[in-house]
Length: 377
Image (cartoon, rainbow, N blue to C red; front, side, top):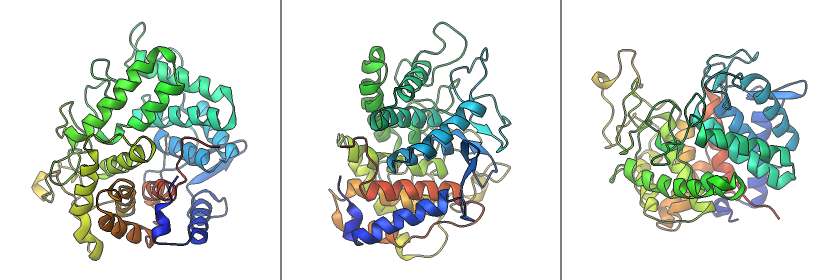
């Protein structure tokens, strides 16, 4: 798998950076770690909110898989199963509680589908890489619930039966563009439950089409939440290009790397890199934008002042924009190179809000260096 970072650094430097980032985030002596071990289990803390989320736990499992660290993977997964499993008899049985305190106490009784998506993909690939069938069986049980829940029991599926879209919340008929992961749906179709293979192949196709529906044709920006027509969906102010939405173009990049099914999403990546290009040479804080490219105005915020008027996770934003170079390198290599250079000189975030930024940074580093894979020899 191509290492795009060789355009801006030596292989030894890239390998050293991968090791440094891993030790910073996962090393138990690191003051900036987000990964905490506890006997034979481990958890990842959202340091900004002081909780443990299925988002972070599933991201950590995917990183452990990519770096061939089965012990970390199993420790994280054991914590998830111990503390985040929805109790039997609850309408969300079969899913995982999206937020817990670091002591394991549940903060909710509901799931967030992006966590389940990453759990399923990581478990299926772990079965393949490490030859542990139990992981695959657990993934297939989860995927069955995500597709079929509510057919013969209480609860709701995470995938909309009619259009195959992943929902933002299982019981609501709306979505988030960054939740659409066609490259994962290909895995679900291939290694998941055979009876759902056609469903996931359709979901893969529809997810790429949804990127085209939800991205602004000029800027490439997508909203955090969207209706099924791709239009911004306003719940509590989540209708702008804000934190969740940064991941959409990173997903486009990874999908391009793994599947390379071009239906026009390459232009989204080019457009969004061009939109933010002026800020590569500008140290000022970046505004929060509406998807048409206009800065959010104070009078458009919620009464609680959300979203903020300035980007809250700049390292995460720049990392996802750099990951888009996986695509733009084939359309505008000069533009792609600017982002690769910028990313190479980007530093990890320190302090309270490091969790989200640094996980997106790590994913971009893995993908751009050719270390975010779905197959191993």
